Every structure is written in structure tokens, then in C-alpha cells.
Image 1 (cartoon, rainbow, N blue to C red):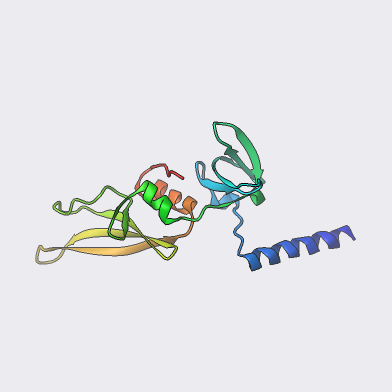
Image 2 (cartoon, rainbow, N blue to C red):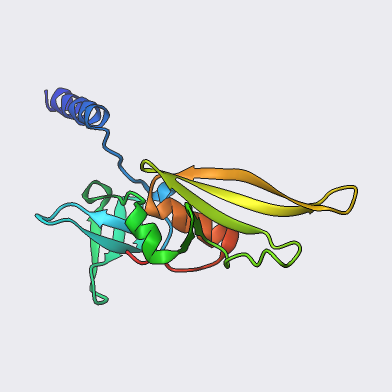
Length: 166
């Protein structure tokens, strides 16, 4: 009888996730120093992942006070225009991840983020010399991102080890 109740409870949780569009994080989604939202308190707030465990994460709960949280008590932080403005230089509609490009120099490739209507995409712009020796630019969308931790993973793997301010 108890097994039937557990299965029913699991099905209810899965249905709630689908209906409410809830995103649950797992160990595969996270890296050390990722920012996530602690949601098991009355006023949710951002915390930084210190260690990743099979059943949850150990987070820095402010001022080097570490606590263990199950994955159900954290959720991803949406990447917002405000977070981008706090962390990157902006020109026109672009937030520059790499150094602001010096367009007078040849071969100054750079990464930038376009954020429009709540959707962010990372672009790489390359300066290419064509057959006649003229330089032209080529921009390619590298990836789309929705959450702060996704941006952190991109920064750690492709650009720099910059920390994100929340």
C-alpha cells in the first residue's frame, strides 16, 4: 500500500513540474562556484555552490557559513538584463564578454551577449581576411542561455574565469 502512495506522490510532483514549468537542478547541471537561488526560505536569495553531492549541494550561505541543501531547495537564477549590466560593458544592444574590441586592430575576435525579450544568446565575432586581403567580420551564434549558471559555465570553458556578480 505504501509503495502505491509513493508512486502517486512522485506522479503528482512530476505533473506539478510540467504544469508550473519548474526547473529542478541536478548534479549534472552544476559546477563549483555556480550561483543558484535558495528557495526553501520565506525570502529566497542567491547562494554560491561550494560542493556538489549526489543528493544535493553544499552552498556558501553568506559569510563562509556552509550548509547542505537538497536539489529541491535550489533553482536556477534567470539571466536578466540587470545581471548583464552589472557584469559587462554594454554598447548598443551588445554586452561584451571579452575585452571591448579595438576595431583598429586586425584579428580582434570577441564574444558578446544579445539580450532581447528575456532571451540571451552568445555570439562570437571574428575578423577574417578574404582572398583580396580585405578584412571582414563574421558573427556566429554560439549558444542560447537562460540561467546565470549556464553563463558561468560558458565563461569558465571558453573565455575567462571571471566571477559573476549577482
